Image (cartoon, rainbow, N blue to C red; front, side, top):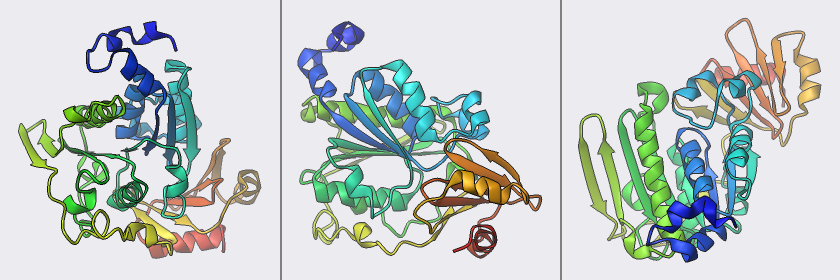
Length: 337
């Protein structure tokens, strides 16, 4: 390890050489490489984390560039999956960090495999259902979960540790669905940076053995209207099915819905097939739609305002509707069962 790279960080008394070595020997999982995830990965790689596993199901679009700091216009033109585009940038920042990029969706079926060998899971997602899967898996496996959320000018952050703090489910009800998102009410980039920076700071405290410095609160704040609140992480709910009863309900939801509405994205994800041969589907769709193919996905734009985005892992995004019936009709018409 080149200590000169981290010379300023080594001067920070709580870290020094021993802490830097601990970071170098650590592995983290970042779920979602969008607004929060790109900032998280940027800080982690520059701090000298040894291994980072990243997973994201989406690809880079022009509207991402306002706040997703690892991407540029070339990534948009190539329609690169975010995980691949992020890996490309991160390896140029620090070649000593091992980056594993996965283009895919986190589900109850694969999450335990994803956290295998991981020291901390960091939340870069944009939906509660995935967060509850991560929360339940982390508490089942005894892995800390660095939670973060940002929308509009508001942010939330907490660092959950199994056996030591309550979990996300204790503080946020699972019934809280259909809330505001960046795609419905917008977001300003500085709140993203601040939330992600808090997530990484708490993670570095933990990984360097500075648990006594952890904030131990759920912090919510608004940087436009100047509000800030802290809820102490002290008393879990006595009937919490995750951290108290150890039932982990999100991990039992194996009969996943084939169609998932991506809130605020005017898209429905259909995941019925185990894989899709992109080259084969190019031949099938090029005569009925305007098709663009990359090594990672295929976009088929139809004149009726619908776009099908096919991924090699079997997922299809039906863009142009949030109606699952309409989405399923387009999927069945062109992709089939």
